[in-house]
Length: 188
Image (cartoon, rainbow, N blue to C red; front, side, top):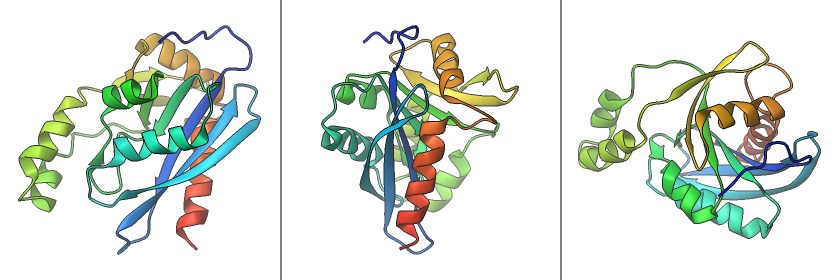
């Protein structure tokens, strides 16, 4: 896997999710966007709220797009749909693309919440959570700071690619548009 950051027109698949309280499934939205911020495709998927299928669901969404021109995957968060944990390394292996999962604020972790909400499966979920490892803080050219977990590229390159897709604030455009789509689809 090699991401050519200097190549004009790299494409990112931005993925975000949304669900309403009481729903058992979350809507995944994926937006293919070129680095000049032109939307070049989109798709939808589902993942279980509180489940363990986020990684497979994102990989399925990617496969259903049937695109061979996507250069990387950006996911809004590594923990979706109430503790449905994305295995960043496995997602990179399944898609054969670099993956960047990003969050927007520092936290002390979610181990206590996992134990509280999943007493029967706590150890399994905690193992998946710990496998994520530490997040790396990245300062964007907008001045905002984000936190990334990545596979298939170095943190330095993750920062460069996030800068290429972030026009303002801290949310890269493919993820921002995917969030809008996921929210609209979940509200139906």
